Length: 110
Image 1 (cartoon, one colour):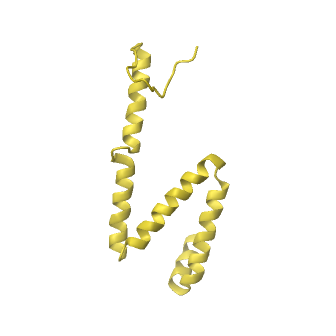
Image 2 (image 1 turned 135 degrees about the horizontal axis):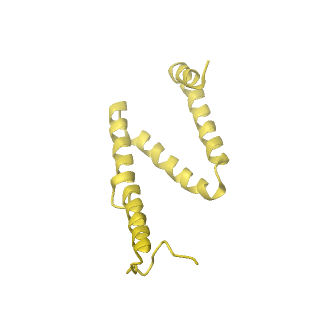
Image 3 (image 1 turned 180 degrees about the vertical axis):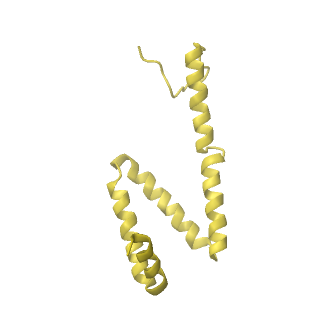
């Protein structure tokens, strides 16, 4: 039985064992990550667990996850904005333009 089928079977037939295994797998994955990433991964998992707890049913959980990840990508401090800022800085550096910001995240090293 593959991992997915095994976990699905546990979820349907032994929810307590499913939860124990789920937590064990999450901890194992976080422990394998580089030390500097582990706090961020724990924070992310904490947020995911919070969404699961707050959601009253599977459909609401799906909607809450969609909202959560859309904000992480398209939100005010989302990944898309961060990427576009970095690209703008790279383009400015390549053109030789002076970056007006005091805290430029990219610097030319010669």
